[in-house]
Length: 321
Ligand code: CUA
Image 1 (cartoon, helix red, strand yellow):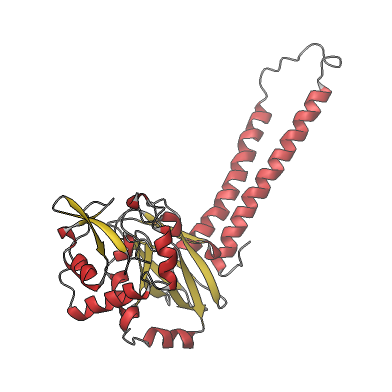
Image 2: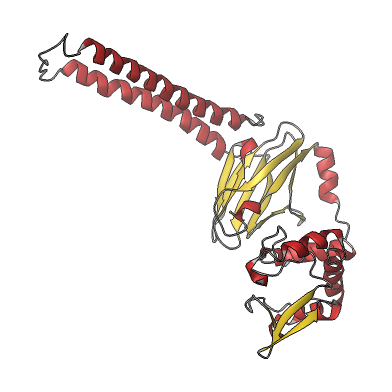
């Protein structure tokens, strides 16, 4: 059971428990009554079946009783639903963008984050959008699940009552990377949160390159979790030997700085064996941005710890076969 971290949590859990225990009681009662009838009206005891031609009181009872029970269940379901849809006035708004296969959280001051960092004890309003296909924002600890649909904005809210880390999943099948479309909710005291929100230190070197690639959506195709069916894996790429096709002829090249730079600016001049020519050109990057991306690729290159694993995984994907 997840911790009960905000008030609608209790309402949702209560509605679930109510429906579940109600169903349990009905199943048990019906089973016992059936067994009793089997025993009581068995052939030796009741050789001639009785033919009953209607009973108004019984018919009213079996209509009215289930009606009242179902309306009772509806009441608790409705109040729980209302709690989930009624956003408190002091809620902190955060823009959620779902994209194959990552989550981006944008705050009012323009800060982006790949994790949802929020203050404890303050309601958070999530405005959920999708940049491509249908995803679904799912945070089980807060009983919150809402679809991210392209072309429209959905919302949901939650409130964390203690500091901690909670899982975020994508709950709508959205492609090969669906199962790795994960993130975290991090809750912290208001003071720490304010400090976190204010830090806008510019990233440097490989970190800046990573942030840039994330912002450009590179990891949507260059999946960082071992699935290289759409595009070559990046870990281990720098410094590795690739088979490419130029003007219909295959040849081997080393993915060095120059090769990668040309491939980012103008990917169409060659294709890597096993892949189609689908990458758009990134010719509007500044020389400094290109350098940062190359520094990042180098940091996860063939000779780095990350690259050793990445290069190995590279042989499993269909792209290299
Ligand atoms: Cu996004 Cu499944």
